[in-house]
Image (cartoon, rainbow, N blue to C red; front, side, top):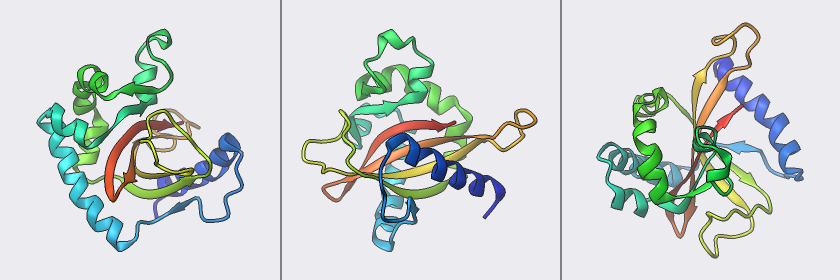
Length: 180
C-alpha cells in the first residue's frame, strides 16, 4: 500500500465519523467480495463506454435520477443548484464534457484508482431510489488528483471519488466527490 492510500484511509477514518456522527461497528472501508467485484468490473466497462460515447440514454439507465456532485457544485454558483444532487439530465448536459476532459477521467480509464466499499449508517439522500434502505452503501473509485506535497509543501493531497450504489442487484452511478 502506497503512502497516498495510507493517507487517504487515515484521513477518512478521522473525518467521516466526525461528519456523520455515527457509531460504526464494522470496518469503515472494506474490499468487495468476489461476486460484487465481478459484477462491478462488468458494470464499470459499460459505465465508461456510456460516458465515452456520451450516450445519454445509457448513462441514465446506469445512474440514479439525481447525481450527488459536489465537484459540479464548486464550479457552479450555489444559488443555481438545490443542494449537491442534480438531475442526471443536467449532469450530462452541463458536466459530462468537463469530466471527460479532466485528468480524473484519464486516471479512471487507465485503472489508476483504488476501489472501496463503505457503509454510512442511517443516511438518506434525495437521489437514492425509493425503497433503497436505511444505510447508504457506497462503492467508491478513489483517484488521486494531487499526492501529498505535490501541489504545495505541506498540502495533504486530494482525491476525486466516483461513487456507486447497488440497488436490486444492479450498480448505479450515485455521485462524484472530492476529499478534501
